[in-house]
Length: 260
Image (cartoon, rainbow, N blue to C red; front, side, top):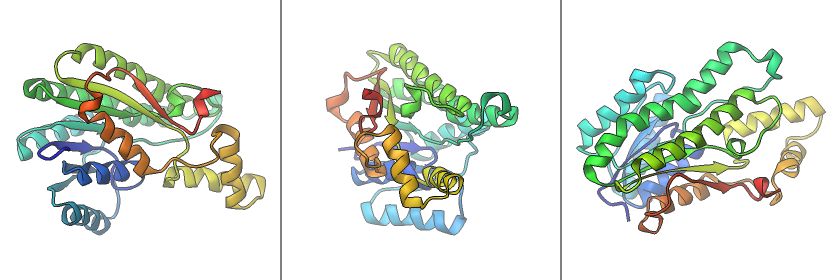
């Protein structure tokens, strides 16, 4: 379905981003991976996807907290592949604390990576996509882009902002062949969520299994985690012809979290 298309997926060396990158590669898109991690592990991931799906896969370690690096990622991709069709803004970090105790440095870092990075990549990518008369921008927001939660001031603010950015870009690119949408996952079993499960287990003196169940029961009526592969399928749908008239919107993949 995506043969000949080129996709950047930020934060794609593990977790949600890797699941999305694998699904787009399965549909024959060429992939630019991005993120931090062990160089040998990243190379194994890169070459594995390339070999399994017969597509071109490159890696760019651009730091999503830095404006020039984010825009440079887009420029380098166009220079290398000659085009850019899909940008998935997935990179994100988390920190929790009551608002009066929230460190300013953590606030700034979360806003930079979870929100400003998406702005910079979109601003750099839209001219190329408009020139091609086709482009897909998918921002990985969160259920926390639609509802609030205690001790997550920066994360909730950034994800709400990401949905607002999605609406504006959707309006500005309407009719150009470019769409911009947000995907809002609930709890996904990733290293980020595993850390929160470990924290809950330690705080309450319970097993990790019980902590995971308590986490799901509090928010996610399905009582099941969303998988990275399912999110990859959602992104793939937004890149399909069936989604040509879906833009400026947020799609929840949250087991019923935001239906309450």
